[in-house]
Length: 456
Image (tube, rainbow, N blue to C red):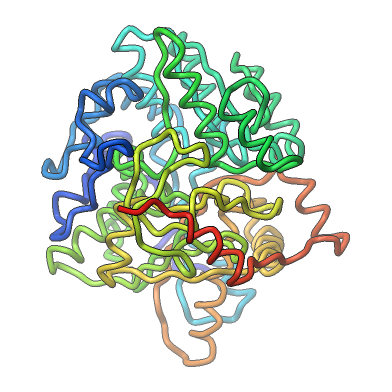
């Protein structure tokens, strides 16, 4: 039975919601490396970035010094529709595992988009509307980001053009239809609609696509369409900034009951959820106020942290975006068409890459069937069907709880449950039918991709 002093779900009051986003870069001794212009090799200026991104978002992208950036009232009012989100004590999972560990998860799936992505989608759409733009373009992998952005654009009266990774477009038709319900146009990527899409299809005929491909197409359309800008759902500094509401709420909820986590675990694709969850805790760690074990969990099929190289690389397959210094598998790396969904990106956030390179966090990769086994175990006892991305964090949390069972340690584990998996039933079907495989790229495949990194 649960401890009466700590409820199953810890909620904050609306008045306790964050009024500012937290910018972890302000406390980083080693700042993330700047984006570079691929033509000149020089840091991108605000003017150059303004041709692709909204003006206010460019300011946020380049701001390495302001610790707290106020959240506009209009965005905070939108947040109140689904925030604060609950911090849940996984009592039932603890009982099932017979572990002395205390497990908590921050549940971000309690909104129509089904994930944490709405936190940044409404912010980016708001700044686009404020700038007087007609609409925005974007990419989406599993579909959570595209869904969130289509919702935000519908709310604000903006046009939304989404390029969806082809394998997800085919695996998740209902996610696609939700986006269309909110008024977005959805195109499978790579497509014949853009120059870069046609080039990728010529070089990789029959490809299932990747986030890098979809980014290239979305950027091309934004740049060539008057009154449009490109918005991105992960990786960029501005996105991790917006997602810091996750970590700020988590920290506030824990402090309500004087709970100090020993480890914080998040799934890692481009870095938005993980970065948002850990930011305020990492801030305490950087300032020497506290210490935490922070774990990034990525798919073994796309292991940018654990097997990639820390180097400047293109953010997209078509090589039309700026260069970012990050842990990367190479912009031409196209993962196997597995069910890791939104984690199928060749690189990682520059912020997280710098923190990882500085030894302030760790990373591990997990196989697809192990991920779904954890997802199923979690669903059966906690009553939430998790997204495949979220289940990567669940896998690591269960593994750590089982270690505590062996050692008798009473560690407190916090992980991010980024969203729900109700549009991922084809993936669950493949797992239940024994048709799911564990493709892991060979050293030769990764080496061949890394050999094509730009020489900076």
